Image 1 (cartoon, helix red, strand yellow):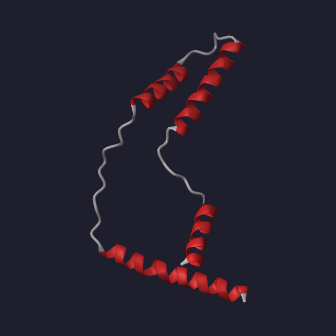
Image 2 (cartoon, rainbow, N blue to C red):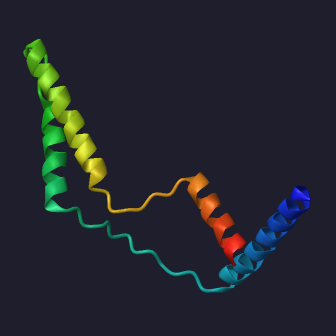
Image 3 (cartoon, one colour):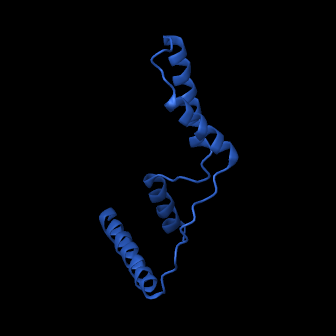
Amino acid sequence: MKKVTFYLMMMVLSLSVLPTQVFAAEKNPTTISSTPKEVPAEVKVLLNRLEEIKAMDKSQMSRTEKKELRKEVRAIKTELKSTGNGVYLSVGAIIIIVLLLILLL
């Protein structure tokens, strides 16, 4: 019985995707602007600092100074990752959401 419901759900999902692809192909394509997004000033400062660190001559530095630079680079990278303005969903979360929608509707 579970296999029948699974196959039925897969058939419904596959048939529901097909018409949207057909209608999407008929519309006129829109042009995508080639202007890049504006980067906030805080992010620019962090990126500039990363470039400065990359350009440094590290051969004359002591071991502790290099260690501090590595820590600073890691901190900057984690801060840059956290400034991303997006909501990320994993594939498993999307599947669960779709299944819940199917079951509740």
